[in-house]
Image 1 (cartoon, one colour):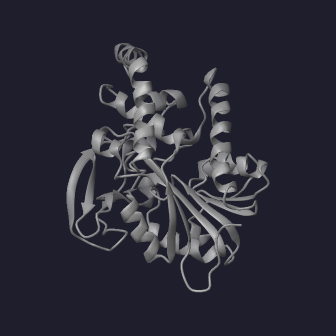
Image 2: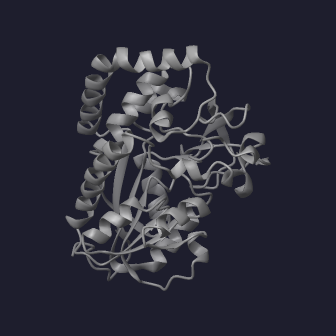
Length: 341
C-alpha cells in the first residue's frame, strides 16, 4: 500500500506557536528529526520551553497539514499471516489496559479521546462499559464505527457532549497529538462526573529512552506527536486545567518493551521504525539490498536487543523513568468526591 500522493507532497503551512502549557514564547532548540514515514524531506524541529520545560514541535503544520499524516493505513492492522498473531496480542493488551481502569472504577460510561480504530473501546464494551469515542481522523473514526462504536469525528469541544456525563475519560497516547492540549483538558473536566476518573497515557520526555536515543527514539513520531510531556510538565498542565494528579503508572509493557526495542534498531537501521512499519504493512520504497539489510539487522540483533529491551523497560519502570507513562487524575476543587468507585 502506498502513501497518499497529497500527503507525500507537503506538510502544509508551518507556523510558530507558543508553549501550550505556560504560554511562553522563548524556547531552546533540542534537535531536528524527519517524520518516520518519509512523507516530506524537511526535518521537524523539537524545542524546549525555557519557562516550563515542555518539549514540542515548533514550527508545526496547521490542522490541514497535520491531517495528511493520518492516512487510513496509519490505523490498519498487519496483513497476511501476522494479522492473527498481532490480533491475539492486541486482545491481551486491551484486557491489560481495561484491567487498569476496572481496578479503579466500576463499569459505567467511558469516553476515549483519540480512540483511533476503536480497539480499546471494543475491549471495554466486552467488560461491561458503555463506550464512546472521539477521533478527529475520518479514516480512524470510520474503522471504529465499523466495530459498532459511537464515535465523533471532530474535536472534543465541538462534539456537544453534556456536562458531568462520563465516569471515565481516557486519552491513550493521544494528548501528545492534539493541537490544544489545555483546551482539550478543560473540556474533559466539564464532561467528566465529579467523582470521575481521567486517565492519560503518553510518551515520557523524562524517560531514560528519550535521553538515550534522542532523535532515534521510536516515540518521537513528528509531526503527529506535537508535544512531549514529562511528569512535571503534565502535572503542571493538569493543575492549570482544574485536575489533581492521583498517581503515575510506569508499567506499560505493550508500549515500553517494543518502544525500547524499536529504538535500539533505529540506531543501526537505514529506515526509522522499520520493524513497526513493516509489521503494519506500510509500503517502503527500498531497494532489495536495503530491505535485506534491515531484515538481517532484526534477525541478527534479536537475541541481544530483545532481552535488553525487557531489562531496560523493567529497570526504567522501577525507577520511574519509563518510555511511556500513565497518569490517573481527578477533578480538583472543594466538595468533590473520590474517583474510586
